[in-house]
Image 1 (cartoon, helix red, strand yellow):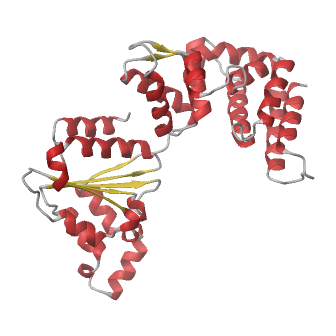
Image 2: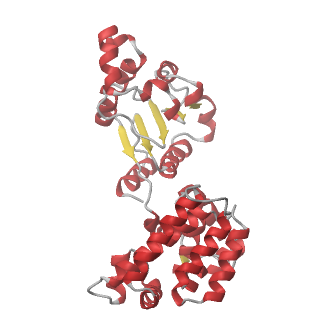
Image 3: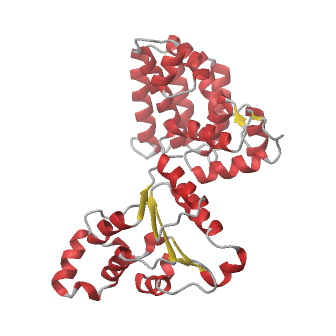
Length: 355
């Protein structure tokens, strides 16, 4: 978690609330973490019935939200108004250019965005207003965005890069007071991608069946999340690293027969990242385990595997492999492809990588 997120959640636990929270960005998980914390911690159960309101962006507008925000709590210190899916509110999606057009046509104070801007600058102290504006951000040039950034708790959460996900998993598991093996972390990140909400949900379900404080192993991940023990990306990359032709072909045949769970785009993306790290390893001046791990952005556990793969794939071969990946990617999109199924394209790709 970022320092900013930690500080906000800590303040909520200490009941140091702010009148307006505007949570936005491409990573919805963190938005939900803060919104859920406010939903659960500001009011007790007896207060929520009259003082907590949740609305959705597609069903409301700024005028309605302002009307709610200006109300006073009933027999409570605060009222909470949470706007979910706020990215669907049209007035919030106006750009700076729209501001100029609005100014030329009408008095600024007559439109809802301007009224909301005024509210943000002088909010109702007994209302906690929360906007969950997912998958995008405001146009920072607009007057409204500037007012929100200056006067509210405004946070943008960016999507994690794929190579950051295993470390996020390690930290999340640590917060739950468990540990996780490097291979298990890798399997989770490769199988579930970078969807933090999905990953956290799967980990929460997984640890229900584990002894408190124990280690999450690859076997636990495979048994509880439905990842095949033999046919997964980790085993596939291991087979390629060792140039184990039989094992690599067996796995790619399985992937080809189960395209829904192992889509070609995901497989080729994984291969591109894998071979990129092998190429990077070739040009490291210091190939000691911990230095190499830091340079490659991987756990030291995996460095021996990259060293082995580098011995089997020289830079010239890697350049050829990147060309093969690009060619296969284009063919899966219909370019220079006379109807060859994706599964057959993947089998041909693996054959050419290994030979």
